[in-house]
Length: 99
DNA sequence: CGTAGGGCGAAGC
DNA sequence: TGCTTCGCCCTAC
Image 1: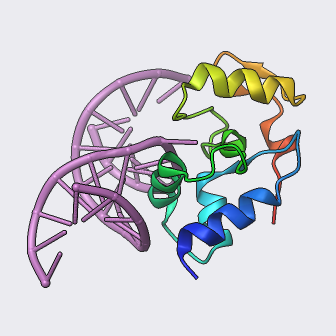
Image 2 (image 1 turned 180 degrees about the horizontal axis):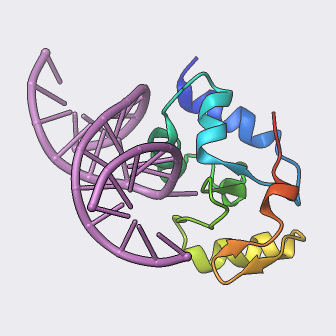
Protein backbone atom coordinates (compact mmCIF):
# COMPACT_ATOMS: atom_id res chain seq x y z
CA UNK A 1 0.00 0.00 0.00
CA UNK A 2 1.25 3.41 -0.86
CA UNK A 3 2.34 5.69 1.90
CA UNK A 4 -0.14 8.33 0.89
CA UNK A 5 -3.01 5.89 1.21
CA UNK A 6 -1.99 5.16 4.77
CA UNK A 7 -1.82 8.83 5.48
CA UNK A 8 -5.33 9.43 4.21
CA UNK A 9 -6.63 6.48 6.20
CA UNK A 10 -5.07 7.74 9.39
CA UNK A 11 -6.28 11.22 8.78
CA UNK A 12 -9.81 9.94 8.40
CA UNK A 13 -9.56 8.59 11.93
CA UNK A 14 -9.30 12.10 13.28
CA UNK A 15 -12.74 13.15 14.52
CA UNK A 16 -14.18 16.60 14.02
CA UNK A 17 -12.98 19.02 16.64
CA UNK A 18 -9.63 17.31 16.86
CA UNK A 19 -6.40 17.79 15.01
CA UNK A 20 -3.14 16.01 14.38
CA UNK A 21 0.29 17.13 13.33
CA UNK A 22 2.32 16.43 10.25
CA UNK A 23 4.95 14.70 12.32
CA UNK A 24 2.55 12.55 14.28
CA UNK A 25 0.68 11.60 11.19
CA UNK A 26 3.94 10.62 9.58
CA UNK A 27 4.84 8.43 12.52
CA UNK A 28 1.41 6.90 12.44
CA UNK A 29 2.30 5.51 9.04
CA UNK A 30 5.78 4.39 10.05
CA UNK A 31 7.69 7.37 8.80
CA UNK A 32 10.14 8.77 11.30
CA UNK A 33 10.86 12.01 9.57
CA UNK A 34 8.18 12.09 6.98
CA UNK A 35 6.62 15.40 7.93
CA UNK A 36 7.46 16.93 4.62
CA UNK A 37 6.07 14.00 2.74
CA UNK A 38 2.80 14.37 4.56
CA UNK A 39 2.57 18.00 3.58
CA UNK A 40 3.44 17.11 0.04
CA UNK A 41 0.76 14.46 -0.07
CA UNK A 42 -1.84 16.75 1.40
CA UNK A 43 -1.11 19.27 -1.25
CA UNK A 44 -1.47 16.70 -3.99
CA UNK A 45 -4.49 15.33 -2.18
CA UNK A 46 -6.60 13.51 -4.78
CA UNK A 47 -9.62 13.49 -2.43
CA UNK A 48 -9.80 17.01 -1.03
CA UNK A 49 -13.45 16.60 -0.12
CA UNK A 50 -13.12 13.21 1.52
CA UNK A 51 -9.90 13.81 3.38
CA UNK A 52 -10.02 16.52 6.07
CA UNK A 53 -6.58 17.87 5.37
CA UNK A 54 -7.42 21.01 7.32
CA UNK A 55 -7.23 18.98 10.53
CA UNK A 56 -3.50 18.65 10.14
CA UNK A 57 -1.41 21.34 11.78
CA UNK A 58 2.22 21.92 12.62
CA UNK A 59 3.81 20.43 15.72
CA UNK A 60 3.86 23.75 17.55
CA UNK A 61 0.15 24.22 17.09
CA UNK A 62 0.30 26.78 14.33
CA UNK A 63 -2.03 26.31 11.42
CA UNK A 64 0.63 25.84 8.81
CA UNK A 65 -0.26 25.92 5.16
CA UNK A 66 -3.25 24.88 3.18
CA UNK A 67 -3.77 24.26 -0.50
CA UNK A 68 -6.87 26.43 -0.52
CA UNK A 69 -5.49 29.14 1.73
CA UNK A 70 -4.60 29.05 5.41
CA UNK A 71 -7.44 31.48 6.08
CA UNK A 72 -9.91 28.90 4.89
CA UNK A 73 -8.22 26.31 7.02
CA UNK A 74 -8.41 28.44 10.14
CA UNK A 75 -12.04 29.17 9.55
CA UNK A 76 -12.93 25.53 9.13
CA UNK A 77 -11.07 24.55 12.26
CA UNK A 78 -12.75 27.22 14.33
CA UNK A 79 -16.06 26.02 12.97
CA UNK A 80 -15.27 22.58 14.28
CA UNK A 81 -14.93 23.99 17.75
CA UNK A 82 -11.23 24.79 17.90
CA UNK A 83 -10.05 28.10 19.28
CA UNK A 84 -7.64 29.89 17.05
CA UNK A 85 -5.38 32.64 18.32
CA UNK A 86 -3.98 34.51 15.37
CA UNK A 87 -2.37 31.57 13.58
CA UNK A 88 -2.18 29.19 16.49
CA UNK A 89 -4.58 26.83 18.16
CA UNK A 90 -5.08 27.93 21.77
CA UNK A 91 -5.83 24.56 23.32
CA UNK A 92 -4.10 22.71 20.57
CA UNK A 93 -2.65 19.99 22.77
CA UNK A 94 -6.01 19.49 24.36
CA UNK A 95 -7.67 18.87 21.02
CA UNK A 96 -4.75 16.96 19.61
CA UNK A 97 -5.82 13.54 18.47
CA UNK A 98 -3.40 10.69 19.16
CA UNK A 99 -3.56 7.49 17.18
C1' DC B 1 16.66 6.80 -13.61
C1' DG B 2 18.20 11.41 -11.45
C1' DT B 3 16.90 15.71 -9.53
C1' DA B 4 14.20 19.15 -7.29
C1' DG B 5 11.00 20.49 -4.09
C1' DG B 6 7.44 20.49 -0.43
C1' DG B 7 0.98 22.77 3.64
C1' DC B 8 7.58 20.47 8.03
C1' DG B 9 10.78 19.86 12.21
C1' DA B 10 14.43 20.46 15.30
C1' DA B 11 18.54 22.64 16.27
C1' DG B 12 21.39 26.78 16.02
C1' DC B 13 22.11 31.99 16.33
C1' DT C 1 11.73 34.48 21.99
C1' DG C 2 11.92 34.68 16.93
C1' DC C 3 14.21 33.91 12.59
C1' DT C 4 17.48 31.10 9.71
C1' DT C 5 19.65 26.82 8.24
C1' DC C 6 20.02 22.23 7.38
C1' DG C 7 18.05 17.75 7.13
C1' DC C 8 14.76 14.44 6.23
C1' DC C 9 11.58 11.03 3.09
C1' DC C 10 8.64 10.53 -0.69
C1' DT C 11 6.44 11.98 -4.82
C1' DA C 12 6.32 14.12 -9.17
C1' DC C 13 8.67 15.54 -13.33
